[in-house]
Image (cartoon, rainbow, N blue to C red):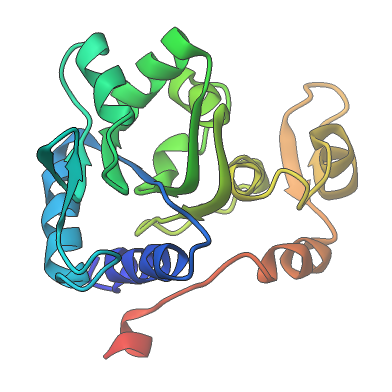
Length: 209
């Protein structure tokens, strides 16, 4: 908490928008944080983004710059199609919409509290892997535990090619008990760190004070 993750993600999204590298930003977060994200975007992006206003005209109506995607499925489907560059949706609604439409598409995907997806086999984790984006920003205020399986699951959302196929990753870095199949240790951790280093940005309280 308090490490500047949200503002850093918003700043990155604004660069993509201003440089013409993206037109749509999808933010997936816990339900309790949807309107916090909306307030932060409105606060930090100001009125000089894109058309120098925080609103866009669509079919003669004024549309907000930031939309919270919520309501029943037909309403959410309509909101996804709105011209507003920023759209915010909860993890559960995202999973439901992926189930209904088989995928979601955006230029930039921002996922907050990503530690919720550390178990790759949950419904929400599987749905998250079906969100198609050109760029991904994953945020977590919770340090990863000392489990390579969780690191692999999280990294796969950012770059599915970083660690290669899981069977190969497991064979190269995870030690298992031959009798029980349970994990008993890890090996070649320096190689894991080298592969992940170009994709991870670690912030500490000391570093932002």
